[in-house]
Amino acid sequence: MFMQKTLSLIKPDATERNITGSINIRFEQAGLRIIAQKRLWLTKTQSEQFYKIHKERAFYDSLCEYMSSGPIVAQILYGKNAVAKNREIMGATNPANAEIGTVRRDFGQSIERNTVHGSDSFENAEIEISFFFSLLEIIE
Ligand code: CMP
Picture 1: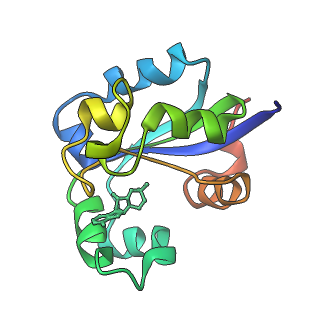
Picture 2 (picture 1 turned 90 degrees about the vertical axis):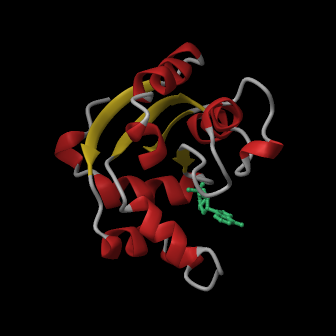
């Protein structure tokens, strides 16, 4: 177990329903610390850049359209094994398959409107954090 940072996005379906606080409580109760956080509204081009790894997937255009349809909250979560811990808190990508008590199971509306994104590896966490945050904004 070692201390890590991971990128979390609270998606437009959650900001629309005013449930970002209910989600943040889940992170804090699980022992993760929100060490940076900001609300922003991505353009479609910015969404396409962030999700470029999925460029060839059938859902890419719809995903990027959705991610730029309203405000998101970008945040850095910090704690022991933060990448894996956050994935545990989020649950499976498809809310229908996610464990009871996970964020996606409790709040997700569909595989696309699945409420949160979290980095899937330590390496991608570094890349995704630097997409949204500068060093000056990260206070450990
Ligand atoms: P996220 O963890 O943000 O990573 C990529 C996103 O693409 C995923 O959550 C979902 O929102 C979306 N996604 C993944 N698979 C599908 C799918 N089969 N259909 C629609 N959207 C998907």
